[in-house]
Length: 380
Ligand SMILES: Cc1cc2nc3c(=O)[nH]c(=O)nc-3n(C[C@H](O)[C@H](O)[C@H](O)COP(=O)(O)OP(=O)(O)OC[C@H]3O[C@@H](n4cnc5c(N)ncnc54)[C@H](O)[C@@H]3O)c2cc1C
Image 1: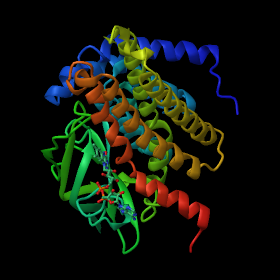
Image 2: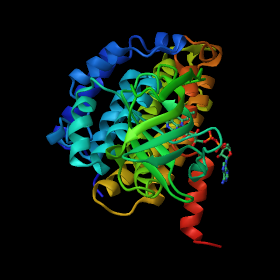
Image 3: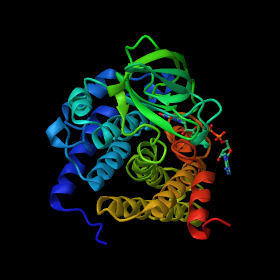
């Protein structure tokens, strides 16, 4: 496997990184403090042609490869230091637009993708419910066929982009064991955005509860096949989350490490830069080791995905490593900064709060271990 970037990829990465430093980073701390989603930053990203990056060019997307999406996501996180923005962007890309692109009918693609790709519309995905988190198959939201329509009733929680999305892919039970994905126009009166959730991190990304109250959708809103969503559409969403979306964690780790290197060289105690103390230098080395382990794991999973090779094990390993190691690195970053790391000023406490989502969203670390052990052991 050759993970070296081509000159074109290097130039692309640099342009995305520069955009992120110039546009995303400046207000990141304030957006975190206020829990504020800034539509102007989103518009600026869309103007860069990045809102539809993974989607085919024929629908207005960027037609980027899986690896290019990873590179962009990583660069945005590294330059912007705004975990919430990456969360909203990742959800828009991989669980909002990509399922429609990969599983939609031609009509559905023509209807939704151009707006999702030019950024005039934001996408979302709603599978999690109050009683169905890790146990995604335990969902209780039901969709019942009524003439030419389906009528959806139920409650969703933790829906990224819920308050700002124009379209939401909603998972609902349609038979005893089967679930179906529905493309729901969020202006549908039965799609009701509830309480906005006050989170510890990724605070610039809006997250909400959603109630589906007699939400009537025409039959042509079914995404993919009836009763097959858990094993097809949802399965693929998890895969994109564990390869492309998780790449923001690497960018965040790189940004945190850069901050720590500068700080450790500048900060003097006992008449010397703290970087000259082995205890601090080794922390930096450990941060770098964890970062490169994560980067290699994510690139490997993404490379296998891109080349069409089975990679469920590698994707779960990547997701697990980023979830756990980004928290470990952020804790070390706070320690390197001493009391100043405990303040908001250097952004390392924010890095910790943002990083923690990596071990929860899109399948917890425990669930990744469950998947890995099942793949190793089979049914025992
Ligand atoms: C900020 C944020 C954004 C999100 N965005 C979205 C979104 O856009 N759309 C969406 O549908 N969902 C979204 N989610 C939901 C997310 O995917 C779930 O939170 C996650 O899957 C875990 O489910 P849960 O929170 O119900 O935890 P639970 O499933 O209740 O888990 C609680 C604990 O038990 C452990 N556990 C559960 N089952 C097992 C088991 N079998 N073996 C071992 N341990 C187990 C878990 O690992 C965890 O430690 C988001 C969540 C957050 C926090």
